[in-house]
Length: 569
Ligand SMILES: [Zn+2]
Image (cartoon, rainbow, N blue to C red; front, side, top):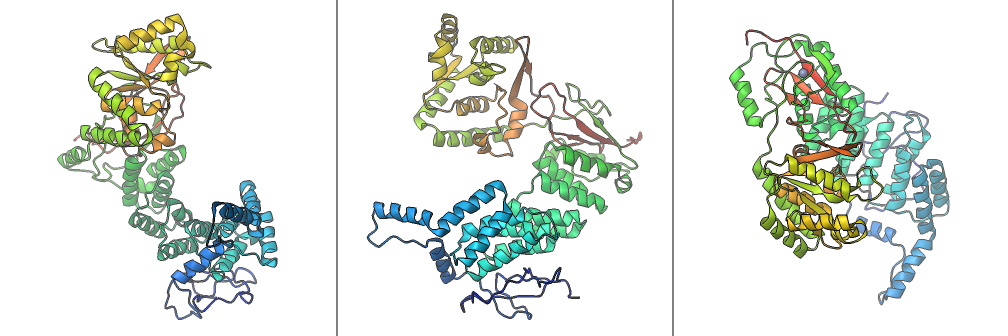
């Protein structure tokens, strides 16, 4: 039996047909055989291993050149014209390689690995010149197979080997597919090795590149190795999301690493805020396990914990597990003021630093000015200066369309009236509507005309110019005016994703009013007076919010974990 290898290996393929040029050296090491084949992988960067028979160097300019020429089998003539380029592209598309790419894309669309492998074998027989795009589709399809003993997975390694032999430079997608194949073979070690090789190639790994190694180690209960992958991710600047943190939390709990559980709970708090049902289950399991009963300070320095709370901005202290004995873990809800219905503790409201809001407003201006006609947006900012401040901003189009097939001014007016009643100064909110909505269609109706005129004369209506995206306008008005925003738009689409995940969700939670209608009467769902984020209290209890759907009537579930109080405190 061979010792555990340190090198990544692939199944061997006959290399007799394509002999690597002297520039391309390969290193093969034996792999513990799972079948009649010996599994091998060409090494992808310089190595001094003694088992090496030949070496594969890092891509030299020649390597890249040969790869590039492989990707462009059809070249323009030196006196290329637009017509000849067009003809060349057409010829490329209709070449056997171009047609193969189209067919492989279809296989990818339908997840048809069997057909893709048949096409690959056919291409080999026909001596086709395969390029990176062909190989990546093939590897991607092979990586979809989750059956450890599957022949398809071995074919994946074989295809990669052919790719290396043919001097095609791999990219991030290549390595990520290979790492997934390794994970399907339940070999997270190999998946991790592939990330290191990827980095050796100067390719920056993505979050998805780390998944196969991280989840593989976590599933095998290899906490130490999982932490190594995690540390590598941090070093590479790849930010773990809920799935990764949840897996680290789980393996840490299983391995009784209370310190890591604590650390990961705080990472979840900072990065994820509200957890899915799966993560809630993992957290629940931790609090119920025997190890959790054993950890915690029985007597702690209250002032130090308070200092921690102040330093952290509220909602957590970071001083470690507090208390002793069994945890009482229940699923519960908060009342309207944020008092836990199970333990009676009150959740805190974590303030937003005004400086953060200002920074956000300026970055919003920058993005809006790039996406919109700058002069129009500047004009709007000046208008706001003259007519503000407002208590609330209304996303008019959204509000007029809630539960409606067509836009209803009457519905919008009901909400505007309600907001005016709520305003301490009885001020009208600012209604933002696209120009089309204030001129054509229902806007022509005499009643609506009158209403629009009233809003306009009161300085409470802004019509965004033709061709604009009104989303930028209502969002900017609410953020810069530090006021409430009325919309049922959850602001999740790509436009809002440009705004990042660190500040925007926190801002939304504190400023968005959502609406529901019963018998055409609007109900305003105000922002909660407490923060919907994992909270660690000064007494050591934990409250973990779960994600809710868009149904406003379904109350949010919280996980409450408390310990018996020490009455002497
Ligand atoms: Zn509670």
